[in-house]
Image (tube, rainbow, N blue to C red; front, side, top):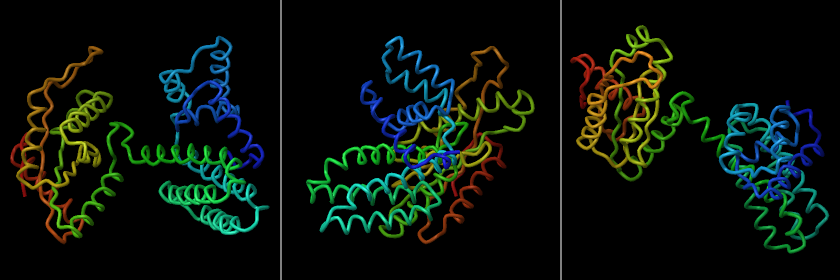
Length: 339
């Protein structure tokens, strides 16, 4: 979709978007940048019409208004957007190269780095890999700007664009690790966090535990009340779990009606207390539908708890906590079991 744009067009869109944002006093955030890039590119007629109407009435583009525009017209950030951002970054690298290509001395090392980064961008396959290249480019641009006053002014605009792009990439990385339905971390995010925690535990002998939670009789809920109510319950359960864990803990949707929590610096006994608190939070709550639709009333959960055993793999740890959960469900549900 974006590959048809020429380098000059991409640079023009970037410059126009940022200039408009500065003129209107709009912060250069990932969401805002995406909205105004799409606006200047005229790729979404309805978005253009809405913004033009707002500008004609001199409406102020508040934080809430920008969030509303993003949610309405730009929430479909996905693989397509990643490709566009990668292509934009390649164009920015070219711009940086041109900015300093006619300078002598200190510029030679910088231009060589830009060529290397451009080549690396042809091989990247993930947001994380792009972020690594972005960080390298930004660091080199900063170092070069400090050494050469002649190029510093020319780098200002490109530096601003790089910072905006890096923020957008951070947003993308966050979104691909979030469960679309419940809003909490997804399986991918949990697996990555678990791998880091295991590595830390092996290096520094750090204790940690894992809780696996499953909604009791969830299939019956879906069959009886329908999948829309089932989705509401999944969101409700995810939010209740998330608010009962610490900021440093990772609560994720593991799959289906199963959720999993990673608790760093937490032994099995403390993890057991956390799991029991989660279980009781559901047992003592009755669900009511604001729309008047029938709801199942009380929803209970079962949970398994286990502590990491030094040297074991991630798959072995997950298998053990899954066994603990199975034991809890096999013993009658609405309970917590520790293995």
